[in-house]
Image (tube, rainbow, N blue to C red; front, side, top):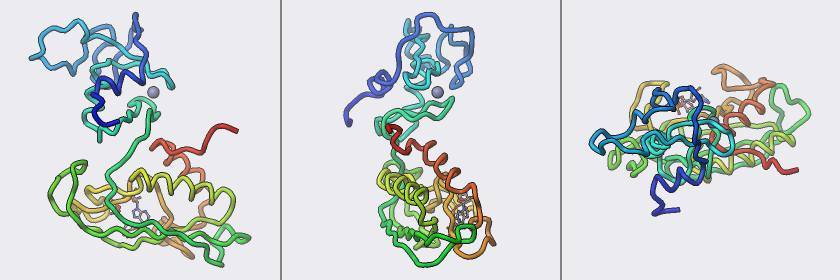
Length: 233
Ligand code: APR
Ligand code: ZN
């Protein structure tokens, strides 16, 4: 995967389109029939600036140059996410710092799940120095509120979500390093788009139970990061 150029990565996930429809590229907002707004003017007029690619799975159309520009702003891990519908091509990874994910079953029920026990997940991350994928490489980051405890019902669906969370953890997608919206602190470890339940018997923060939609919602949030239950039967 390393050593593959951005153009090569993008080309794996698209088919060329000869006659693009009369619509705009949502990356550069320019018509698909004309050149990409992201072609470096110093490159001079390029015959390939108006090349259009169709993403193979979701079918969305963008300028090839725009997709390459988009890829260049990412972690460049060999994966590409459709900017129109968020379909992930390849395996998306994140910038979650090193740490530990543990889980066990506790013999108590969550509000709304009276007939099941509970899975408790414990995430541990320590402060450190930001790496090359982070916003400020070389700068320290803080890690507040760890270990963080989270809860799932110990049901078939809850166990399936746990499996997806383990995959997301391996791909470094559960947390990221950035700005906390909670207190505005920069360069700190924050939740990354997957809404965990951090309250057990109450719901004072809104991150507690009961919440009948929780397992479906978190499954959707994981899918948006490219982590999905195997679709094959
Ligand atoms: N529990 C679970 N999720 C939360 C919580 C919480 N107590 N507070 C915020 N979130 C969600 C938010 O809804 C948002 O979508 O995390 C996302 C990122 O919000 P930030 O405030 O930037 O998150 P972060 O700084 O990581 O954490 C806020 O969460 O687990 C607690 O101890 C942690 O108090 C801290 C809080
Ligand atoms: Zn798409």
